[in-house]
Image (cartoon, rainbow, N blue to C red; front, side):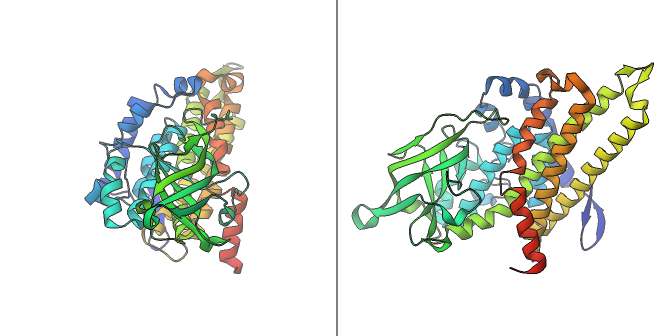
Length: 391
């Protein structure tokens, strides 16, 4: 798992600090997440107490600057953490990823006053954050969002919001919502970013969606009905929202790819262990060549995914000019291959793979949505193609 590919220098190994970060995340996941993941999924329980335990580990602000309690790590460090956490539960790891995206946006685009006021409770995990971009009729067309925010109050001291956000992870459970809203003209130039506290007047939540996977975290609409938000919570001025949203996507795509990789690795590990014990026709099924070829293909897909993901993360850390293309390639390839590996692992277990207690059917359900969120994999192909043939 530790070999990574750097486009400039070829193959290299993780350094000592990265190995320590990876091991810390693995140990926490094995101790606090893995033993509970199936029950959380069955009960549709949001384990906010265990999520908050990641704060002292530095997982509340992985790539947030350290003056507000962040860990100040890079994107490669982050994917190592999310990969390790998702080996125990992709839904758990994905929520940590979403929280980190929201915190990073405040750190990267907020004023010093906003950073000092808003980030310490987020980096400590005293407060949890959700990200609100998608709307009922906008989907991947982020520039088409309709939620409006209008200045009001004395000297324009507040914004009043009306509209709704769709498919918001952690809605109703999170304490803070980083939301993209329309403050101006149609199109991307009219979009702004507001940080909205859960207790904002006029903020409410829809019913909990019944989903295929990610049962551990609630998914609901975030509804604004004359919702009043202080203007001091506007990030980077009016009209900066689309730029902020686009800046967050590359990292988000790498994070969700890492969550796919960790979940797929877990499914593969379960299938390999099962095949070494399950007997048919007088020998364990891992001795049949057809099964060996299946495992060979799965291992190849996992390692190719890992190399592509780590390379893309290194490019984003280096601010490479083609980091966006590599992030899209990693998201598309790793989430596709990750789902395929988990699905093949289920097939290895046969009927047992279909049972909840064996854990693989949960992984298949959890990983399927990764091909949709952070931009569908069809949109990833559009992005990659634009880099190749021009816009």
